[in-house]
Length: 392
Picture 1: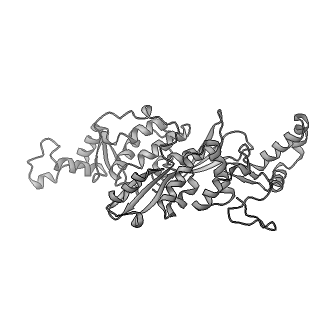
Picture 2 (picture 1 turned 60 degrees about the vertical axis):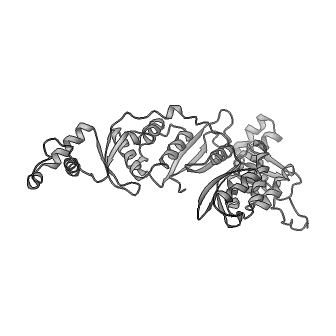
Picture 3 (picture 1 turned 90 degrees about the vertical axis):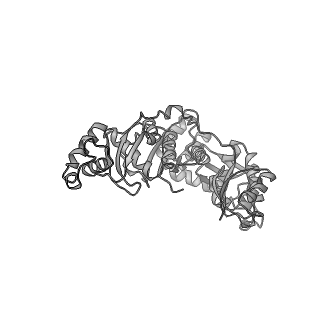
């Protein structure tokens, strides 16, 4: 699915933190959870967010209240992604009916996005004159049903349309790349959906979600799956086995491996990998994602091998910038008073970079990771220069 919005997320405090994430919305559950792993908010932390790109619904740019939460924003965009062109035009009309130039709270926008069935739309009516003519021709204007054609054409359609629009509190929506536009008016109260939504980020009931497809159609498959469930997919798609089926990854507990899952050709290997991920707790998962990034691992075989070597690494998720690494080191080797005195006189960024190089560590989006033996981090199969040994 093409993203509607691109959002930049940043940890609000402390100022030295470089913890951030870029998220395309609507985002699948594991992508949201991955963004939180990157931010490392802790129990009382908060995030700042900014929409950096509007691929669709650009009319929302001045309307979104940035005091809302990321989870409310994602719920809004998820609903918008479900609207067809006419419903998108209705949503744009509902925005106009708010009659305000101020930002609109996200819960209200969510309610509007779920209330498109509370309105009717005339896609061919883009002004009062067109509205008046359409209503008159459809028999909705009293007294004009039996008029001769030449007399009918003499009617003031613009005045008729204006009176209808005012009486119905309707609005005209201009055509755009997202929708056909038209005349929109409400015929029922708005739905109140936002207050019923549970927006708490939660892991779904799968570790990998696939869309399996063939000429006959497509189905979704949650992994890990039983052999019986795997065997049933080809039957559903009228194929004898998996050889002629393709799939793409819709969501994964490790979002960085979604392309690798989509490119894999052995469904059983993918299912085994999903089973391995299902056994990994949240602490090990973040370390694993940091290791995959540090080793630049992009294939499932190497990723599976790395999963067996987590005990060979030291992971410090509290560090997101060289400055934080430097401050952490000074706080360790000096007492608090000495560290406070010396810090203003040290180039903390350069010092932190030097420490990371000295550790042979890698500062990833999830934190600082280094090997317990002090050697550089490499992908499985790569040989350490000069040592001749294979690193895991």
